[in-house]
Image 1 (cartoon, rainbow, N blue to C red):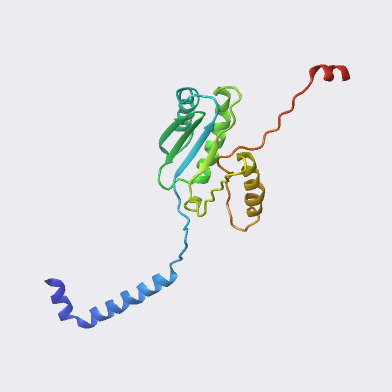
Image 2: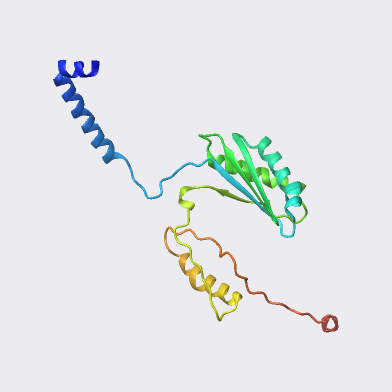
Length: 198
């Protein structure tokens, strides 16, 4: 009730306040930038290990546990780590404290993962480190199939006729084709003929 009494006793003050609120609202609306995909600082980084032929249990024991232990002790501002193991693939999602500089966190993760490779199974490659961003959401996905062409031919056509021409489009971000089979060339060597030429 006191608000009503105040408005009735000071009508000019209330009118001036209403006009100020309306003007400031219009100024803030016109000054606010708009974007379809705004830059959102998501404090999550994925570390993706690949080692074909390793079972999920071995991937967890030999790769992911070591990686998690190093991530939680050697990287700053880690909130928690979530991991998932698949055959030949291990994915660790590293969640950071709000306000963490993601570029510095990615640099720390990259350097730490380079040092931990020595303790991993022999022949493992460095992990793929992926930073999440709102603009990473796929806008267009293309599926290619054929009833007459073999899968290796479809893969070649998609790679050479679709993916490579799109690389030159300004602002496009492309990924490697998923599925299919790249063309393989088998070379059979004749050991006797090779030794005869030596």
